[in-house]
Length: 89
Image (cartoon, rainbow, N blue to C red; front, side):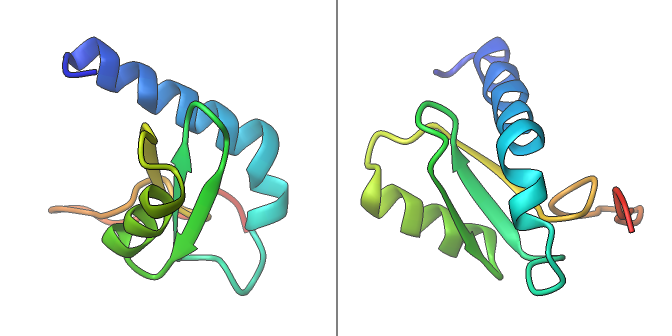
């Protein structure tokens, strides 16, 4: 998957998995602000304080993973020239 459309599809699938299967499980006080990396083909995931660490852990278990990253409880992983907003409180 190398095209913009492919990357957009990974984003769509990742967000769909997060909303439908993982949000209720992951958005706990201990996880808010951490990073989740999701394999969009299996739904498998890893949580870490850092995007690279979460991705590497997931890739170690799922070498062919197509990964989507998200900051748990926020609208973006990082903010550049703006601010992160909580999705719910």
